[in-house]
Image (cartoon, rainbow, N blue to C red):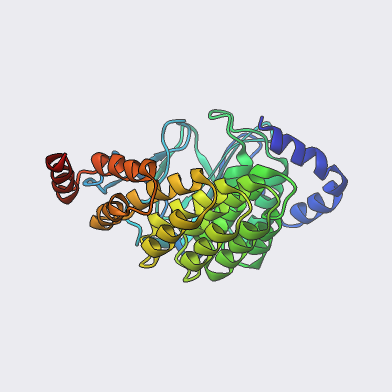
Length: 334
């Protein structure tokens, strides 16, 4: 069991009466043993999570998710595919939760035993039950991963204020993994408000690992604040590791201002490791933009010899024809 989730449950003992009284008021009535499922409305623009025939992007055909199989994961093949309803699947053994999953309502599933279907479960009732699972659930019986992580993903897919409030609360939890997973799902699935909360965590959390993770999470958001906030983080965070991650994820967004912001950091950051990582970040820019940016670094006589050599190194790793042509020209000169 993850130490963070064990500690979370211990810390929550003082609130157990309140949590359980809320959860039991109208919680889903699960089978004592076996699979139980219920359907609720999804948050706006929820991704159509399902399983697919294989890992080949050219084959987008859905396959039944085998919920009892540790190797059968879920994903989205088409980023534009959304769902307006999700199904929660919970497997119990003697009243103990062993597995937990949320999928698009239209996603086919297979289980080794029949699934008990529940009707009339509201999104708020389901969210309250999931909130308790984040706090109390054990590890997955097959994967040994904390079920609380799946409960957070399921919460993020639920419509309504109860789910949103729970995620906001967990994003400020005392426990590292809970904060990290919460901000990830907030940024990915909860729209502008989720991006705002993630940004606040990114600038204010006391733990640099959470700030780094929030930078990654924000980079996955469609919010207009992504690039400005990553640039601000890269310029202001007190730790070089966090500043470097900000430049890396900014490059991955492909934002138009990436080259200028990362180039400025390369030339002014006092930490040589950040400058080195800034060069690597330039290599992550999409298409020919990365090649052009690296050539600019390699040609800049104001930079150190080692920094220019790093740019040459990353150009050599590129599959770009223009990078190859530039390297041949450099070799010819020598």
